Length: 582
Image (cartoon, rainbow, N blue to C red):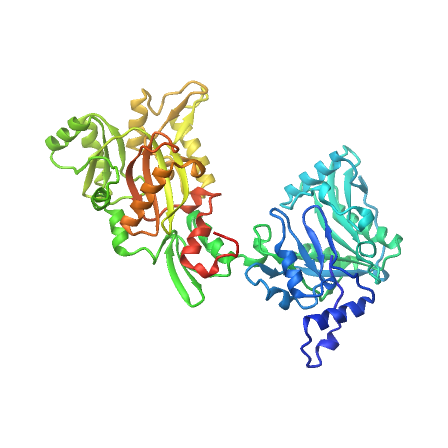
């Protein structure tokens, strides 16, 4: 894929040549470099031929102009350290190995591979099949309209087609360097080799490589370069058998989500939950050191530029003990927000049965919750009889001996996430529900849906078969053993907490300004830099609300694709912000 090695003897004589001097030497090695920088589009991104750029800054700027969703590669870079110095937070040295096969070393195959044929990609149907294959292999699809035309030196794509059914089972891209940038050495390169993982035909990848070799040999060229991940030992073994040798050359790419595993490495080996993992991954993307202190508890430490911050998921050292207490103790939360005029339910501590019954009679419908609780544990909603209130209090006491009674309010459950006193995400949370199929009973449907939620959230969400679920079903006229009709949707929880099977609908773009303003006021009153506020609203784009809870440890992973982890790391390490970011 790459190459033009520098003459190492020149670099080992104690000299420290400038970028311009190194590029001049590289140009001398190639005798007749193009007069202007050479850039080719391959459909998935651009190849920037490093030795045709006169200055490291111009090459760095071109890489920074990469289009979203594409992957640009600068290859044959004489002095990569000087290019990286122009934008060290945004560019990185590609860790892949470059291999070269001199055609004088090539030996034809001793065996025949049958059952498929190689031909050029020609039609829209071909492109569709090739892109399906690339997506299946986790690669970028090709935009054929963006490819530099062949008469201007652009690449050619080839496919392997099963002779039995015409299915595309492999693909590869070849680039003729002589046509692309007048390479006097007469080189070529191989890119985007992929084979269908379900393919039963042996040797497809090897035949595609050999086809390119023999095709470029017939054009009078001298060698073929390719790039392979440094730890892809199986592919390297194949290339070694074909006669490829390692080549000392460099390539540079831009840090983006496509290249993430290349520049952040494997990350911590510990199995973190999704709420810790999303933060750790964003920190690693920015070059921030991560130390996992307790994977099961979601505890980790981040270090950067002499600053160290401990976190438990989104709870960090930046949240004071007082602010945390204000959120955990729902009585303190209520009193603090009441003083600034935030609209909240009526509230009192559970007491004697007679007092509880009087509070129920005053408001008609109640919510029961432990004073200090999280993740919806011990919460019962829409209680209408003294007996229901008594039973709910007994369940809540398992989580805190102090239990709150609150007036019940109708509405959608809205979670607003604030970081550094700015609204970053908002979502309507919907309670867990199941859909009848006319065959399974409700216990089976709930267990099935619970397994789906666990799989989707890495085990963080499930629907408990507890008294609250049973009460919700009973209120709808059902029991665990009943079989609902096919197609009937039935809520099985009254609370929309994600840990008990709830789901999210992002409404950030339509959040009413008054809801945003009330949320910011609440966060500033509690003096908490990262918080998830729960409001009951008729709709996200209307101003009416009742604020029911503040959560000091909000699950940032639940709100993707909103940039919750990015803003969290911005808060912790402002100097790590990417240029042009928030």
